[in-house]
Amino acid sequence: MINVGVLGATGAVGQRFVQLLAEHPWFNLTALTASDRSAGKQYGEVVNWRLDVPFPKNVADIRIRTTDVKSLKDVDLVFSALPAEVAAGVETACADAGLGVCSNASSHRMDPLVPLVVPEVNPDHLALIDAQRDGGRDGFIVTNPNCSTIVMCLSLAPLRKFSFGDVRVATMQAISGAGFQGVPAMGIYDNVIPYIGSEEQKMETETLKILGHLDGKAVKPASLKVSASCHRVPVIDGHTMAVWIDINEPVEMVRDAFREYVPPISGLPTQPERSLLYLDDQDRPQPRLDRNRGNGMTVSVGRVREGIRYVTMGHNTIRGAAGASVLNAELIHTRKYL
Image (cartoon, rainbow, N blue to C red):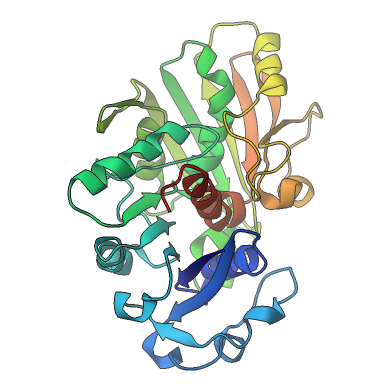
């Protein structure tokens, strides 16, 4: 077993990390960090558990630690659910001290030496860990993309066999993506908010790195143009998006590509039976019906039409955040980086 910790364990994504790691077959959850005012208290005392799953009792007695590298000397790997402005320094310090860091924060995603990984899409990019170590770092940082970017990139993975250069996407994003305190109730009830700060830029830049080509110790970005329009809607969990892509092949060939997609990895504990699921129903996917497929790790695709146009949806705090990071760590472990 590998001893692991969660940085920022009481927030929305931090709780998802705890949920996924509490009884993980490979990782032993021993360290949880939060704000200084919670340090020294038991996790069960301070966490306001808001997930739709039972609280894992085996973590209740874990003492909260301060969020600094000195408090993490007994772990080998940390999962970061920290805000970007805090994550940058803490994650760097952890990696420089020899820890592995699997981060959900945006701080290091576009760093040329940091892999931005969706295991079913670009597992080869983990080779950038070697570039970090060649530069003198004892540990490493690996990031997962923005929650909406992950869903879209998984839907694009089967389509890489076709030629395309223009991707347009309109998202309908759940309120949980903004954290527990992110969207005031009176602002989202009976409403759609047509702006999410920096979300469109993340989708437009991160996608190019993920779909890019690893050339030695650098990723050459994909030669695509991605245009995104991001919107917050009154859904608790599950990001839905409409995608337009300039593929000229017949629509049935595109549907077959979705149906027949087989990821380049397999056998990881958090990986679902179907990473990408094609739904034939005209009115699917829907968040309430489809977000928990594959324990929240399956991305669903439907409404594939001439154009080419389709709808895709995934659970934003599992597939799009904590689950993505845990899956990265499992892949890292199989590649002998831990």
